Image (cartoon, rainbow, N blue to C red):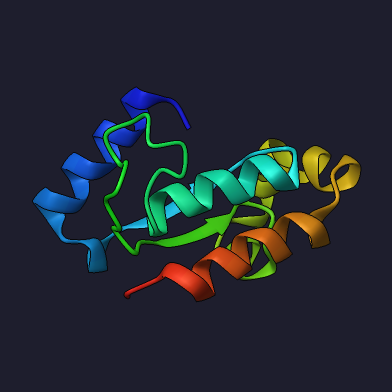
Amino acid sequence: MDLQNQARIKELAEELGGENIVVLLGAAEPDTASLAAETVTLGDPTFAGPLAGVSLGLKVYHILEPEIKAEIDPAVYEEQAAMMEMVLDVDALAAEVSKMRKEGSKY
């Protein structure tokens, strides 16, 4: 997750309260999704960005997780995400993000 996104998420969490934020990821690789999920829950593990040492504990999901898919208009999902669902390892992505959600979510 780049430094600008970290800064924006931190600002939003401070402004709106972490209980009012859900982070949706679209990473293609499980390791990348896990790193981003860890960043918004436990803090930036690289200690390089605005979330270094900052545990926001935000709820985080991957866009392809079933509970998120169920919330999206099927036509929009088909147009925007269905192709990703066919070519990516959805189970591995969901497992990595879910693990971080369980470890770090305060909300």
